[in-house]
Amino acid sequence: MTERAQAVEAGNDLYFLESAGVSSEIGLKYGEAFRSQLGEAVGRTNAALAGRYEAAQVEQAAKLMGESFSRNFPYLWDELEAIGAGGGILPADLQRHVFSAGIGKFPEDDGCTDVIFPRSEKGPLLGKTHDATSPGPGTAVVRLIRHTSMGTVLCVTRIDGLSTMTGMNEKGLAIGEASIHFHSVNKTGTIRNLLLRPVLHECSDVYEAVEFLAAHPPLSAGFHFAMVDASGNAAIVERSPTDQNVRWSKGEAIFCTNHAATPSVRALEKSRGPEGDRNSDARYENLKKLTGGTGFEFTLDSMKEILRFHGATGGICQHGDPEYKREQQLFYPLFTQRAFINIVKSGMLLVANGNPCHTDYLEFFLNARRGPFK
Image 1 (cartoon, rainbow, N blue to C red):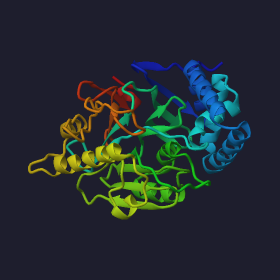
Image 2: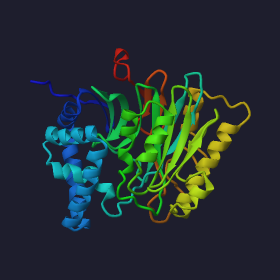
Image 3: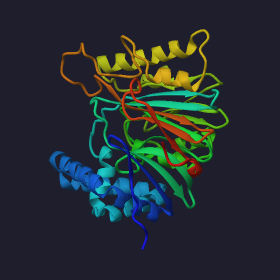
Image 4: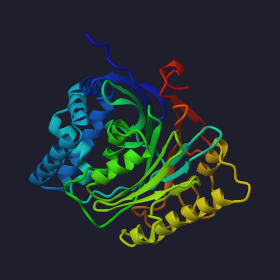
């Protein structure tokens, strides 16, 4: 009998799980390890869907998204089915949870900032904050996945194990995301958070990843995909459900907040509201000043300084807005829940499980000889 997988609690609502094998083995172990938390999350999602939509609408939308997902990423579909089996969750219930963001108009309250240093004393770095309109972080899982045929990936996911925030693979490719929103919809596309893991499983470098994203559009909303590889190639993909624009680094720092930096792409976006727009733009301007200053050194320490930067406006490390007294908006005020730094040459992922200004980074490793984390 296969030994049951055990998740290690690394911090408040932060877990680490290593799994290996084919997709069904990886999924089964994940479902067993997070049976309780995953069951609760799936129950909340299904109750929310039942209260918002007609059952036939939910079933049809989930069916169409599931067919597309299984066709495009069969290895992840096998893992998804096995997660349900391991967690004792009905397949339809789990699928509705995973694909819930594509059913109707489900707003997402995330923000996020991504910063890439194509070079540093530690090699290429990808730093990222994960921001939301509540200070308490949701459950996150650092996954070390040693897939028999799809390679090794170290990534951070939500409790479903598939929706990914950041991560890297054994080839030296790292990816992060930041939310942007467009009016367009692509019914043949994939929910945006479900695209990061396939990039890491199927791509070796930034060039392959850019081509992959061109062939796999998001279903709705949109994303910045921030990517760097071990050779120092770096790009930010501004991706809508119908179009893709790529900003390439020529060796300089490159970054994104929650609006496209390309004017023609920005013109197609939805507004985040006056405060949300100002917040995103102020963060971007601060990043330009921080990385463009005389004598600025591209080091791991300076990446950490950027991620914990506070300013009167446009802080990268966000703590809400004490002066804001009006009703909470969809994208404002924002709180930084976690911060991440991918160090691709050494295969190390740093995770600050809270605001990076006062939280030490935990270290997670692709290389098992160094241990899973410390």
